[in-house]
Length: 345
Image (cartoon, rainbow, N blue to C red; front, side, top):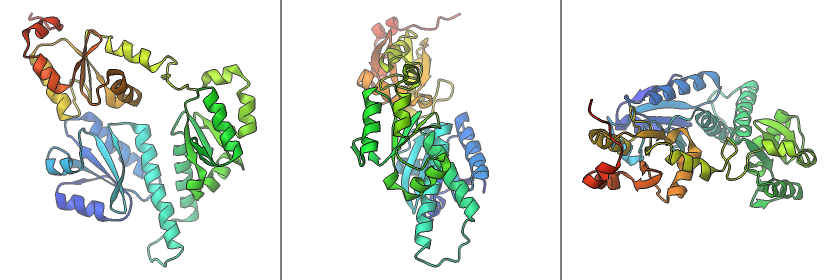
């Protein structure tokens, strides 16, 4: 079923109330990325055999509903199951959207299968082949959810078997950045991954979605410095340098740098749109960085600058502040003389 548009609060309430999994896209007509989200959702619903309903709503046309759901940017996707919010995504992040679609829908499918074993239902069920395809889609999303993923008994802070504890210690000793999944938390994943990977035991380590192996294989691989060099390290970005170094370069890449949701042509939240309008009226010569396109920068810059929200404006590599601070500074003629400005022709 293609994504549908919802135009009233009553329709939103009815859409959420149904127990089957659903995703509601808070959309803005001026944001090209919102159209991309709708297209991606249409494609995913057509390609993946999962029972997920999808709809979009104009976030600005129904501001009360957007306020109720604490929407601060478009696009925002809110996921529901059994009438309750279970997850959300800010921005157009295709890989994350695909992963969440599969996880929310298949998790609900597992629950439905469990409930069906104790009750009789007249609703048509998925065929064994469809169930297998749905599980494999979920497993594919899980093994690709982090560059390095370990499927283990327990979690890194509390391993529940000696082999899992050893592999965590090995990864930590080399400062490897990794994600984990507790196979005790989901029997479908625990049994399905054995067949999916053709590997009968746990823990299992994956790199870029490909199985490395169990503990013995991982130990052997870690004896090779070239293998370790390929793996992401804690505090490193995708290019291999430290995150702090990357952030220093970014905030200093232009004299006046604005970190915002969206860009100057298509701001994706009201605060970002307002600060862009203020800078444009002041004829400021500035560049922008879309934090919705890079989660590492989005989270890292909050700690780097000790400023928890966006937008953030930097002058000569130093934080000026957020929207309220910038509003005040732009009233100061001394500040206006300091910032680079577009000259009149």
